[in-house]
Amino acid sequence: MVFLIDAHCHLANLAGVMSVLPLIAEAEKQGIHFWLSSVLAKTEISWHQKNPDKRVAYSAGIHPNYEECDLELKDIEELCIKKKIWAIGEIGLDRNNPDFAGQLKTFIAQLELAKQYNLPVVLHLVGHTSEAYKILKQYNLHYLVHSYAGSLQGFKELLHLKSLFTISERLLKRDKKELLTAMIDSNRYFFETDITREYVKKGEVNPLLRLISLVSSVAVLSGIKKEQLITRQQKNFHSYEQSGFL
Ligand SMILES: [Zn+2]
Image 1 (tube, protein in one colour):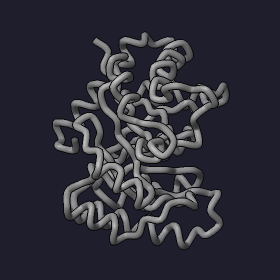
Image 2: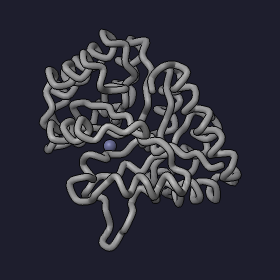
Image 3: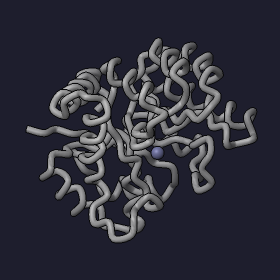
């Protein structure tokens, strides 16, 4: 049986343009059984609270470079106290945001929250990988690094942490082959669509199903059988369940 997990997506954001529940039902028939949804806005928190679903867990965080993110530290802390979120994130550092000092401060404040409430962290790292690594290694937290497409050296640093990675379409590019291979060799991966309302293509009926074609493309590129990839990400999912994250 196929058991796929979409380990990074934005279901509440997608719900702004599509009715998500029927999409989930159809995706489940095709083998996608669990979604890790990332929340970046207050309205998205409300959506998840109004639409509880045992197939979905959500995280919340202040993104380093997303204008529509209106979450404040107190919103995230409230979710921690009420035990609503499985992780803090996506948070991190992004070279496209010129205010390095500001994003660093917000990043560290949220890592402190994760430490205080004993939660994993979903990471968004675009550039500044070494700076991020130096900070992350000071915290003994579990990290889910979303759509990492930086240097191979940066990836090797992140492997020293208690980290897993979500493979996205970005790793299908020819110049990312070495990184993709290293990620698969590490066995520490999931797959993700990162779907938001902005990413939906014209005429696309169910963007959640992209996960299936992503896994097929990775199988072709890496030369590893699709079944093997699916089994591995399923094992990683079970390790998250056993750790009590989900
Ligand atoms: Zn995302």
